[in-house]
Image (cartoon, rainbow, N blue to C red):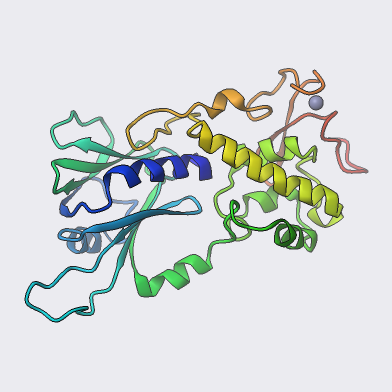
Length: 288
Ligand SMILES: [Zn+2]
């Protein structure tokens, strides 16, 4: 599933080609992952793309209000946000309108320069919606802090008060937005913390180490243009390479890079968790 580094990589790619372009036409195939397909198809044509930003794991294409040629300045349309979540297998790419179309491509957004934005999603667990600027407060209210921006002290405060497993907290999008299973496991390994530790039982030093590990792992993964585990590709259709840097994720039975012990897999918070039992000792009274 694309997480923060993958989505950031897609957003950086889209930022090269989209701002300044106008969406001319929307064509939809299967649309069961779109909140309101009619609204999407009606409201996007004619809109000019102002910028592309990332909100956690969401891609947000900000559309300028339509310029009324004869009307007065600032006729009350307001900005629209075209928001895409890639789900498990979503791909948002920019292609030439004449480029071959791959199977499972469900949406086409024609641009005024002969290119088009395409959305492909094999499993269709993605999501697409249009949110007016006035609705963004509510939309963002459901999302936690941005992991690349939260300060060390705030991170420590956020985690130290909670009696939840540290892995579950890292995955909780209402606490931090954008961290998923890969980067939670990789961060916990670097911070030498067992995924089943209770956050409130960790020392300040351990929480500060975890904060640093989350930042380092995410920034490094962005430099490697994300991890391509299954279908993830960037906005040009290229795969990322951070999967070659994983130290624990999906390395069950392989030697730990630090101690040569065997990496193990357990279920924590309902999710597979990869860790090194020697480098990340289990909480007291809990052997597995
Ligand atoms: Zn180890």
